[in-house]
Length: 156
Image 1: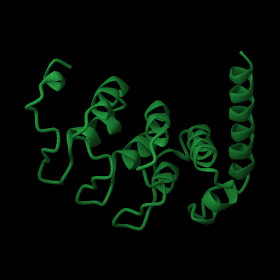
Image 2: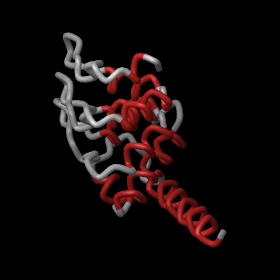
Image 3: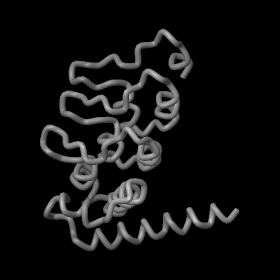
Image 4: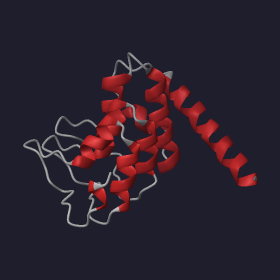
């Protein structure tokens, strides 16, 4: 973390796949590093690697919901950006997590819908065919739960 405090650090350096430290931090779930990087003026969260994936793609794909929340708080994160295979971040979450952790996929879907005022049916229209349509109900339940938490915190 001391390295990130240096003003002369080039955080846009890429590896041979076009991956930056920001992509790596999002993909490994290091929310402290992501927070520090987001606080800098020289980090471009819209930067894509050779697969046309952003840090948001990697956070969703790996199920790092805290980072997903952080990124969805920003206006410059495009949740509908397709990668080179035509997959959005939500599609990647489905592909990587659906069979092992469908609840994580539902949580990511709920966060996307809530923070971007999107109806779950819009997400499900582009979801892989193997995804159970009941996932939309789970996403809707998560959205309702998030609204309930938001209303409770607003009353405090």
